[in-house]
Image 1: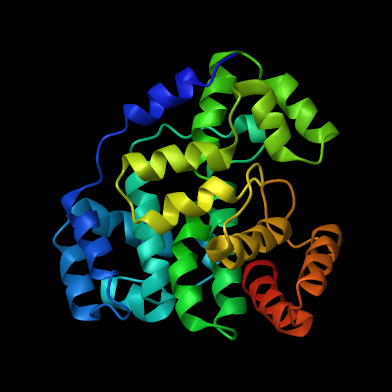
Image 2 (image 1 turned 45 degrees about the vertical axis):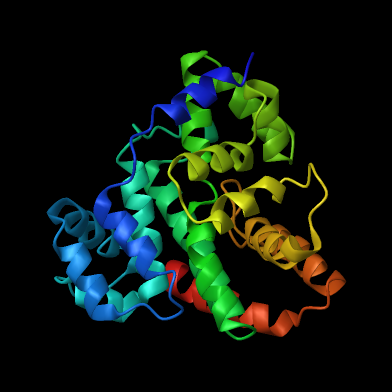
Length: 272
């Protein structure tokens, strides 16, 4: 058992396309120019196709097909489209099989989307700038599971991994048992390798609480941990996960009613 194979997998990932890096540069501004965002995406046919396929996924429940990038940005908002762009580009580098986590690729996409949308719906009422900044990070914070799943499959340990996930509540603990790394640690390597903004990989360094979080990062880490408690690969907005989430919110002085309203909107969108 070693973390070296995971590092090798990360190092073998190709760089992000030029179009994606241009979009990241655009988002260094507080409010990216929508016309420029549309122009960059539409110049990349494969990226355009991926984005339109994602926004027309059944779990979004739109009655009419979204046929243009501008329409997608209007409906989803620029931060969420940025999330989809990054996710689409990174996923192109992976052969995704999440059987060890007992979820399908479609469910994985839904969980990632719910995490990012819950964060935005909740925190836009507290600090819109933080909400915009963290939405794409929340969308990608489970991506490391793809590489961990590859290692578990390759080692022929799928059944054992599933059994341990059912036994232990701490997903990171089980991941570390099998690969000596957690999703957040793999994410740190991925985001650094792809030259994403420092905020992406820096937040992953402290998400597992294995090292003391700097004062400047505490709010970011707490927000992501709250979202991950409410929505994760084992539990999505259940009574238990929400009860645990409300406890964290109360302990840290957050208004629980604001969070409940965000949860209600997400539940209405995905489950009703």
